[in-house]
Length: 427
Image 1 (spheres, one colour):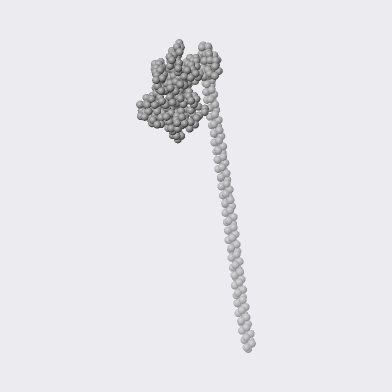
Image 2: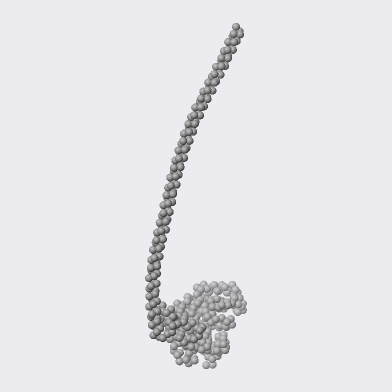
């Protein structure tokens, strides 16, 4: 019994184990089945996600293609517009060019017609007056001015000296009158001494006499001296100066004139040396800047010596006649009244004195208005101004021996200058 019971118990125990195992196996089977279902569902989800992704990619690609096509179309349109604009510009430019060429051709035709008319009129004028062919060329150049008679100052048909530019003498003299008529700014005012507190006319004469001596020793040109005095008078017309800086103004004006006229320019130390080192280099530079600013850098002007050169040529002056005229003009620089008259008036007055002194018959021609008047209808100058200027010059020259201003007298008492100073003193 015990064995049977044990067997039965063992059987029951075994059956329980078997049933447990069966339950476990069923559970495992169920779990495996659930896992497979999950995997299937996951695979389905993954597949759907992949499909959606692929669809999105297709949509994106299609959108990108559309955008690329749109941008390409925009670029094409821009290129077309640029080409059209360039073509339109080229067409407009070509039209403008054609218009301009037509206008230029018209202008050229008018210019040619005018030139032909002027040449014909000049040829008739030259034939009537029996002038040579070279002078007719100068007349053609001058004929831009309507009044040709005003421009004919000198008869150049008898000129034989090759160094004299006879074809341009009339043009040069006419341009000198134009420059004189325009004037320089500021103009010199001979009454400026009334506004100067520390200097007077006597001090000016001393300075000018010293500058004439320095100018002669350095061997400067005539233009340099006349420009130097012009700068001094113009500066004193607009600015006051002290007595100590008056000589400084003189050497500064001489230095500026040398920069305009001379080829071999002395150094600043040379100008300081002739003042016995009375000034320093920085003082000269400072004065130069002051003069340049006050006169607006305008220094060139037609000096009397230029006008007198052409007048001496016209009246066939000899060397002693020419030297006497230069002596009169340089001596007149000592007087402050030199700034009162125009350069052409001074030149004509000197020519008048020379011709009267040497008893030339055609002395009356020296105060012909054509030599100092640009427009007779507007000019206020006349024969009276020539004679008044000549009186002032003669008064100064006659009394120059009574003064201490002997630089000009010594200069023109030498054989190189035909001893014209002594000739005047002896008469």
